[in-house]
Image (spheres, rainbow, N blue to C red):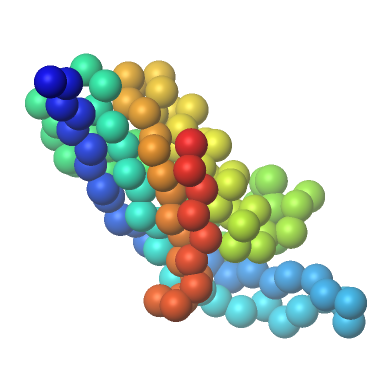
Length: 120
């Protein structure tokens, strides 16, 4: 029987954003975005949680306490819940792949009752 080790991490991103609607540019407002990231350890090695946490925190760090609309790529794409989730899923997946990990899922929440899930 093959066993896989799957790990779930949570990360938080404090950032502002605004979106556009038929009425034009919306008001800037803050969120504490919650990212739940599920990873599969493909090589079965011992895992130091802090190593994975550091890598993902380093990905989020440039966006902490900023207006997402002013940061790449959100200066070109509207930082909706979906666009944020897909961007960070792509970015995290690429980095984790190089470390011999498989990203299975990213769940991003802008409130406790609103989430968007990206499956790899």
